[in-house]
Image 1 (cartoon, rainbow, N blue to C red):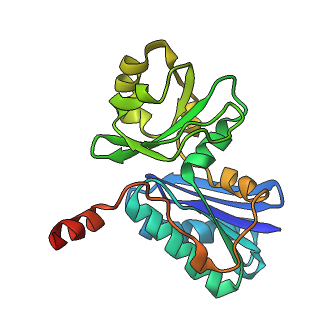
Image 2 (image 1 turned 30 degrees about the horizontal axis):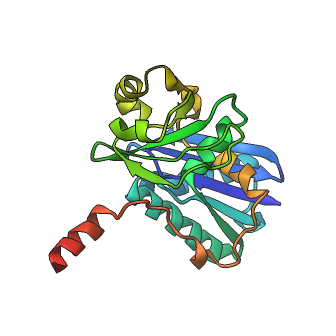
Length: 224
């Protein structure tokens, strides 16, 4: 099976091509001009490097959040458009699940934490083997002690902003994973897809927002 996987839920644009469980090509870059300008050119570059035709792709895997609302929408829209154009299956992967998958197995529980802006984080608690313990959460980093009561391994881009708060709150329970795994990797999403049944229709991909977008909140406030 040939897989195209990509994630645009954070400021890193990650694209990978896999054949069965072998990673054939992976490209990751900071999307300084926004994902809408970078995603398709990076996909085209990966296909050029591997000499794959788009029509050879059997499955498109996309990160569906939580993370940047705009980035999630761009990723899912691109996955749907490509899948319909080449008539292939699709699969959405939660970015928190993918981050935890990259750290498992671990000696201690794992907590991926993605910057949610507004002084908040998206997070979830996982077992050392990567099994999810909690719901997907949207909380303030200083409230993390309500969830964590033991040594826990943290990863995710929220650490760039909130490491000091998390360390102050959790003290010796706070442990940091390698920076190279702080951002979702498309290759890991592709590997995860091998153990999950794809959906038949690209219309079935759903974003994982955890909280309403600013636009939704604005509309709700307007309707009051």
